[in-house]
Image 1: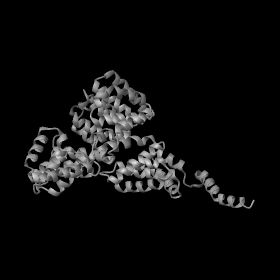
Image 2: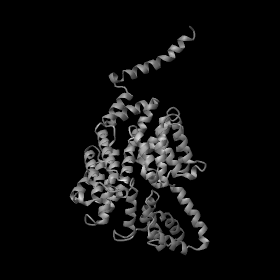
Image 3: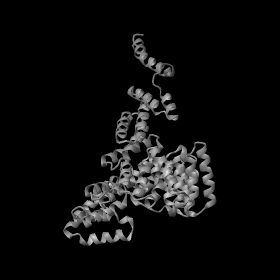
Image 4: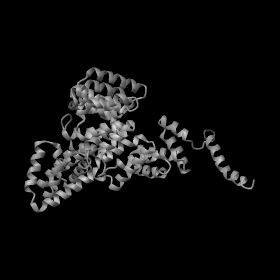
Length: 462
């Protein structure tokens, strides 16, 4: 009996705490169930209050929940808080590892150390039973191959598929997209997604793409009926409906069905504000669907929801002056609001400053915005930078930098880009060639690769 009493005394505070948590609803103490219920009804304030108090007591699930709320905020400060909070739970939570790995991988220009840590976290989380870690892990392998020189991505995916991991089938589609041979595997992609559509709603997007490319109207119609039935029963997210609408409206995938795309978007827009911006973009691409007043009304709804994409499109309208009178000052105002999260806003801002649309040329601002846009996948910005450095627009001509950006602009695959790259290459002195090629390799490493894969399947890694 001498040893039993101390154990009971030590256990008493734990029992008391457990009882207190059990009675949380009655006593006003923090409760993870209350937090979850608050999240479901959109009350993030109550959810955060409960998660925070339990997180401070060391509850791992609440630490992850609190970090998830910070992530949803989206500001740089929110993301820093999320990263710190996820790290508190790493030792005990594979889910925290998965979330932190995704956060690090999605940073703008992550450092090599962050990329390597992200890969390690995602791999550990996947091994521990977090299947959502697999796709962002593959994205890292594809986007930064220099960080993983011994990695055979196809071999790794094939191994996962043999082990029966369904996410590996989606990773195979991702690989096809990044390699540019998607069209050669339409049958396999259809087979994969027909089997996974009930558990992976991204397959609606893939199947819509396959049927659009093949012109299979009957299969597309049946797919859309299933999509909207799933949306009405809350099985399919509005984001997926929006993504499918984008497929239907994309003339590069086949004969567009912009009317059906509009119908899908109008169905989800009242409950999903991002669809207002998609509707505005649809009218921008297909003016026959509505007048400019309707388009601007869609954008007003998007701006009321504080959506940067709405500011981007409105800024572009004032920049181009096609559907509304050109107004560079209004364009700058709206584009600057969008620039922190929309790379193409930086491209248009760079052009405004470079071309002197505000009354004079602002070369440093043009350079800053164009470089930001280029490093976030805007290949038009690379072409503009190559022109800027080769012609000395507002800055001293620099053939080394002109060579770097002209080479990076080659995937633009236009006669202008090819002609500019050849011209600069001929003008570059042989004594500077080695330096220029090394700096080009450095710039490519900073950016990583597989921009197309990142853009095409970013939604799969949410």
